[in-house]
Length: 181
Length: 181
Image 1 (tube, rainbow over the protein chains, first blue to last red):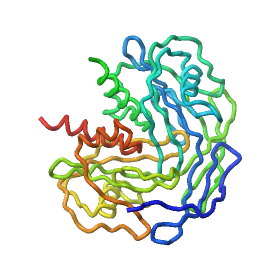
Image 2 (spheres, chains in turn red, brown):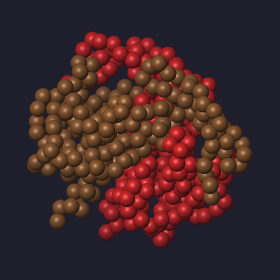
Image 3 (cartoon, chains in turn cyan, orange):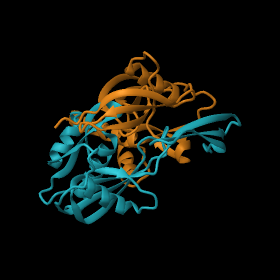
């Protein structure tokens, strides 16, 4: 069964600020036409930073759309033309001050397939070395550490509810279990 | 450390179609002001439907923003004033034709905390009975079944990359392991 929807035309319905939103006219498989509206996103990278003692470096960050503080992994948008590994290294350094000697690609996820073209690449980072963070003065977040067991508990008891963080932590855990013989 | 950002004013920068996008002016903790743009979303419900043989009911659906077919759990938006359990039951029936006698709340996730206020409530559904689906003719999706082991493999090998589906499958697996003594 071919499920493809075919592009006919596009218009930008919001732009100039942080978000660009497009509306495309598409042709469906049954011959009808429909509109598809979605956020244009440059893609992002999320990092699971593992300390020598096995703990994970996490952040607390206020997220305005939901008016609450979330527990999250270090993550950020890909700059134009930037290699995704470089994005991960840059975001980890900027937000937490850590550099890492070992970077393992965990895969990618799509957080919001209904109305955004965002992709999130995921890395495990090991061999961490602490240093000064490079957060700008409008970036308000706290960095802390938690054991992997505590991370999994926080997912189960609803203290961690950020989708990208749950996916990356669980994929990292599977990788760690598979490779620790 | 108080990370809260305080609302000053709002404007709608896109509306009329499917997506409503707001821009709020906010006051940061350091006294500066900034803009926050985000999609206004009514919330959604995702369902993990488990057949008597332990298999999961999944869907293949073309998602236009990424121009690809995704493997997903049944899910959909909450109608105005609708109870979230009713949303789950309605979406499962409409998309797959199944009704279920047992509904277990798994928690909730936020797929896109940077630029959307969407929440996704998650349910496990058991005691499934097949019936005719109620998809409208513009809704193009395929329903299929997979064992739980195959679901976990598809997450690990990158065949399932939809964030909400990965989170809900992994939370359901933890629930099933905890309750199967």
